[in-house]
Image 1 (tube, rainbow, N blue to C red):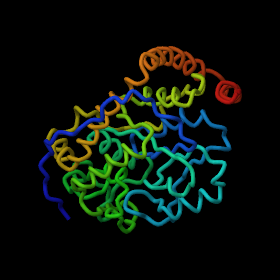
Image 2 (cartoon, one colour):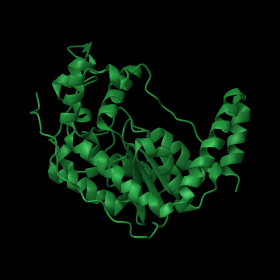
Image 3 (tube, rainbow, N blue to C red):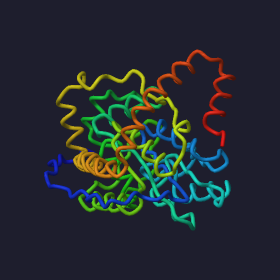
Length: 320
C-alpha cells in the first residue's frame, strides 16, 4: 500500500501566553515514552526524584496485543498497574498508552519529549537493526531507502501525533516479525486533539534538544535537590548514518509523511520556550551548574568499579 503524498501544513498555531503561574507538582507523574525521543535518558533523571517503590516502569512483552502504536493495550497496562499497587505509585514510565491516567483516581499529569520527525524516523529504523529486529520483506531486510519509499508504517507516518492524540482510530492488528503496520491516516483533527491533550493533561513537554532543561524544570516544580538529576545519555542508536548522508529525496519523503509531526515539533518548541520563562532565572542558573557537575560525575563514574558506582548513586540519589 502506498500512501498519497500530503502537502505540508502552513497554518499558524497559537502558542499560549505566559500566565505568570508556575504549575504545581501533581501527585502522579506519567512519562509517555515515545520511541527514540530520548525517553530513556529523561526517565533516568526524573525517576530518582521518587522512592524506588513509588516507580512503575512498563516493559513491553512480545505476546501482548498490539494496538497499532505499542505492544501495550490500555487493559494490559491497567492490569499491571493494579498488580503493582495503584496507591503507592507516584511515577509511571514506559511505552504506556495515552489515557492511562484514568486508571488512577487522583490528580495526574504527563511529560514527554518530541523529536524532529526526520531524525526520529532514521533513528528508529536503524535501532530496529541494532536489536536484530529489522523490517523485512519476503524474509529479507528492507534497506532504509525501500522503507521510506514504501510510505507504509505507523512509525513513518506522524507517529508522535498518533501517540499523543491517543485516538482509537489508529488501532491495528499486530504485524508478523519484521512487518509494517499502518492504521488510519493522521488528519488535522488528530493534531488538534494532541494539542488539547498537551494543554490539559501535560505538566510539561519539550523538544529533544532541550531534554536537560525539561528535567531541570521538573526538578524545580517538585523541589528536588540537584543531585537527583545526575545522569548520562542512554540507549543511543549505533551504526545509524548522519543526516547529511541521507539523500535529500528521502528526507523530503519523510517530511511529507510527517507534516503533522513537523508542526507538533515546532509548536512544542514554542510552547516550551514560553513555559521556561516562568522558571527564569533559576532554570538558566541550574543548567550551568548541572552541566559542570554532571560532566565531572560522569567522568569519575567511568573509572570506578560497578560496586562503588552503585553505592555512590545510592548516596547521591536516595539520601533524604
